[in-house]
Amino acid sequence: MSLSMTGYGQSSLQFGGYKISVEVKSVNHRYCEVVLRMPRDWTGYEDMLRRKVQQHIKRGRVDVIINRELDEETAAGPVLNRSAVKSYLEAAELLRLEFGLTGELSLQEILALPGIMDNLESLSAPAAAGEASDYSEVLAAGLEESLQSLLLMRNREGRYLASDLEGRLNHLEELHAAMAELAPHVVTEYRDKLRQRLRELNDGTFPFDEHKFGMEIAIFADRCNIDEELTRLDSHFEQCRTLLKGNEPIGRKLDFLIQEMNRETNTIGSKCNHLTLVGYVLEMKAELEKIREQAANLE
Image 1 (tube, rainbow, N blue to C red):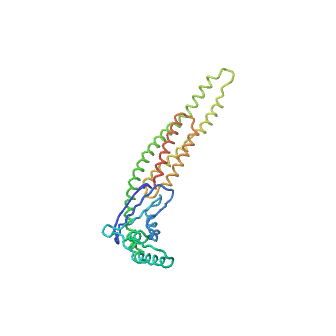
Image 2: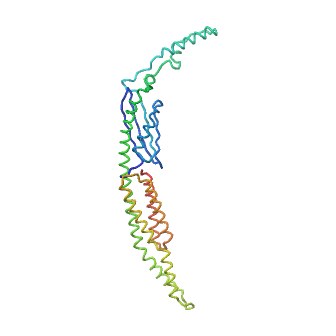
Image 3: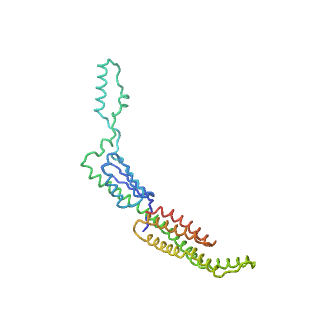
């Protein structure tokens, strides 16, 4: 089962008067990189959440975004900080007595001072160590739900990519079969064309040496032989199909096989001395590039 590295999942739940949302996004990456963004007082849960992500995802960059906000029933207006008001008034009285300053603080000026009005969320934020286990379970559950949604998307896209790759492998195998069928005729065509050219050039001033001619053909046949490359390509095709049907991450292995297939194709291109074979090589290289681009999205 092939998995794409691209996916998205989210979940939302309520706990302790909060609405907690967990959003998970994943994109292509060479390794497994997990980036977490959450309220500062929940940073103690990072290791636990990172391990949970790594249990499900082996490769890709995963962004986990956790937000919290008071639910509508709990949310309320600002709360007057009476101790802050008292401190400001005492400070004003001290300034008046010590420095002989005059004037009084108005109601509007007092309300505008920092810390006079506290947000209910800051007052009720979980800071006590006793609440850690409760939020740990809630966050783990929310992340698990989001990850399952993300994995479902990665699975769907992975199946699509695998189907596309299988179709392209079919095309490569068709090109491979055409090459294998044409390869034996390359030497024959070269021999006939060379014999014809020698006959046209022979004006009687030099003898035609059949032995040297045969040696030339043998050297050419050895130089343009592509049987080994075709055999290795056939093996690589089979390994690719096996990977696409497996249940393990295949991205890196598939990338290696594509490199090997490119290498064999380039060798065929350097050996072949036939216009049609060159056309097959160019078409195969173009198809391999498309496969490489698609395989880069697989875990």
